[in-house]
Structures are given as structure tokens and as C-alpha cells.
Image (tube, rainbow, N blue to C red; front, side, top):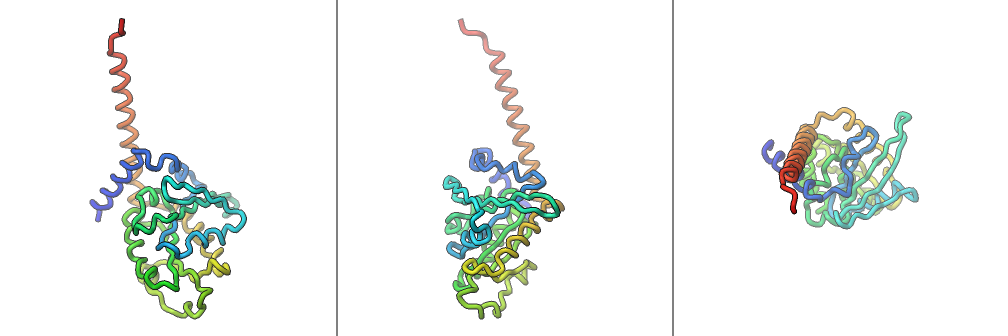
Length: 235
């Protein structure tokens, strides 16, 4: 488990070094009042619709087609402090049943959604959860049963996945707004709490990799300067 996780983090570090996520400014998530919450789940389970229902007219989606994701920006006041939240949506990338490692990097919470009308989207939750835990072993994860407006009797069913994993579970409807605000506000609170109290091993490893990469670049830059200084002037 350790070696596999470390290998994946090394791949992530290499991808970042290659510029795969440079435009996303992931360093901002190190700030105390900025959190990143990611959404996971099969295609067409209603992740984007839930986001838009929660944010309503105030949402500002930012399409980043280069990275196959959409960012939704949100600000909230918690205990008298303004917290800036970036919600990351998959924008179709989930059809490959695997996300780019940068999608998980520095995430503070995860909202994992399935469609109560499509059993396969529920059966696929363990696949998404396994990948999440490979990159972010400790962050809070909320399991969300969407589209209950189609048949409210579904709320009487027993969806055991969340209980087995010890995860909070929500019945919601993006169509009529049932439980949507509560779910998202709980996610923000959990993300902020995690960030303030995190001792996540993966975070420590990534910090070490980033520091190592910075040191390597500085050494390379120093050597280049020495090489330039040592060259004789051309006549």
C-alpha cells in the first residue's frame, strides 16, 4: 500500500513538473482560508446540476477544457471568517473511470454522487472510492444519492456502502433542491476542519516531493549560471 501510493505521488509530481496543472495555481490551496472540494461519480449522475442548484445565480463556473474540469467558485462566512471554496467538477473526464492525479491533489473533501434511478452508478462507488483513497487517504468523503424527486420511496431503501465505509450519507434532489444546501454546507465545514487538523501522510509526502523538486531546479539553475560564466567571450 505504501509503495503504490508513493509511486502514484511521484507520478503526480512529474506531471506537475511537466506543466500539466500549472495554470490551476494549486499553491493557493495552502492558504488558511481557501479549500478545494472535488466531486466524483459516474457520468450523468447530476454532479454539475447539484452544484448549480446550490450556487444558483451566484455561481461562476470556469471551464478549463485543457484539463477536462469545471471550477465553481464560492465564498462562505464561517465563525466570522470568509472562506473561499473551489468546487471541482469532472466535466466528462469521469467516463474514463479514472481521474488525472492532479484532480485529487490538495483536495480537502470529496462529494461522491450516484443516481438512485441507475443501479450501476451505485455499484461503481467502490471504484471511485478506491481511487480517491489512493491519492487522498484521509479527507472527508460524503456519499450523495441524487434524483430522489423521481421516486421518494427510494429514501426507504438501504444503501449500505456509506455505512460500511463510515461515511456521511445524504438523499438529495438537484431538481427540487431537497437537502442540497445542507449537504454542500456540511462539505465545506468538513473540508475546513480537515485542513485545520490534518496530519495526512500524503500531504507530507507531496510537500517533500515539491521541496525536492524546488531544490533540484535551483541546483540546475546554479549550474547553468556557472557554465555561462565559464564560457570565453566570442571575438
